Image (cartoon, rainbow, N blue to C red; front, side, top):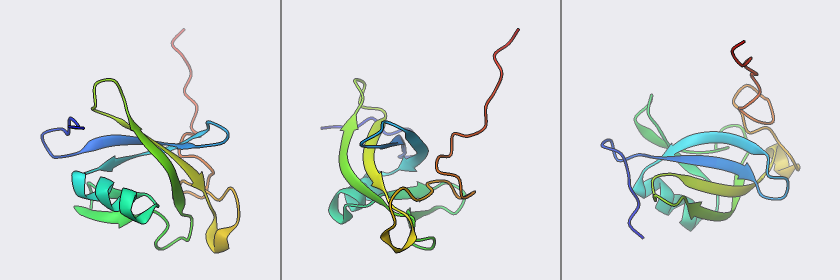
Amino acid sequence: MDLAYDARGLIPAIVQQHDTGEVLMMGWMTAATLEATLQRGETVFWSRSRGAAWHKGASSGNVQRVIDVVADCDDDALLVRVDQRGAHDTPQGPACHTGMRTCFHRGLRPPR
C-alpha cells in the first residue's frame, strides 16, 4: 500500500482504544516510525518539536500495544487501534502527557 505522506513525510495517526472505541490521541508518523510501530507492536511517533522518533511510554511507562493499523479511504490518515496500558502494565493507563486518559478532554462550545 502506498500511503500519502505530506510534504514533510508525515501522516496523522489517530489512536483509539480497541475495545471501547475511545479516541485517545493523535500523533504523527513517518514511514520509519510506522515500520517501527508494526515491528515493535507498540506505538512509535514522530515528534515535530524535537525532530525525532519517540516510543510512546518510553519514559512514562504508559504504552500503547498495537492491535491493528488501518488507513483511511484516501490513504492519508491512519487509525491505530491499541490496548492502552499504564505504568507497570496496569490496565487503562493515561494516554495524554497531562495524565488524562485521553488527549481529547478540552470541550469547546459550538457557535450560537
